[in-house]
Length: 165
Image 1: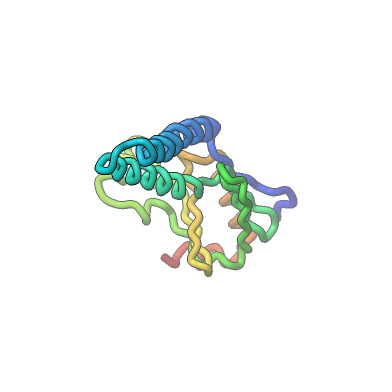
Image 2: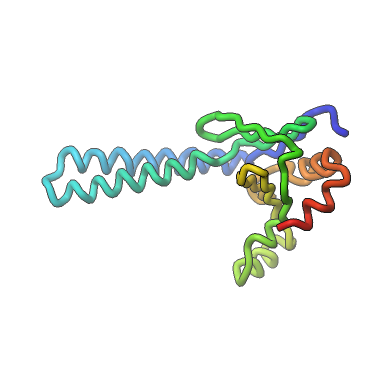
């Protein structure tokens, strides 16, 4: 069993892109929409309200992006990219480990397999609470080390969790 925490972290390029894109897109839509609501005449200010609402909805979904996912003994921690919120799960709360090839299907899967040269793009961890945690190789550095450490931590449960879907 590993004594030091094992961390899968978001690629630096993705962190920079996500920060700039969310600032421009979410901020632009929300502030622009709010300005239209405040200063445009009646029929046009409804468009501003819709733009502001779309910006807030996108911001809500983007706020769930993880900066890193860490395994420290029997605790899996995820830290949010934008809010810095830290969420912890216990390893024994995992009810399934699903390779992402089983989650995504169709022509998109075949195209990505050819592009990346692999059939497994990461893993989806499912917890008792219904929470899902995706570890995507293209987005995170250290996914394989994290999963090996998780396999060591789970011991004999690893095989049974991989079969449940």
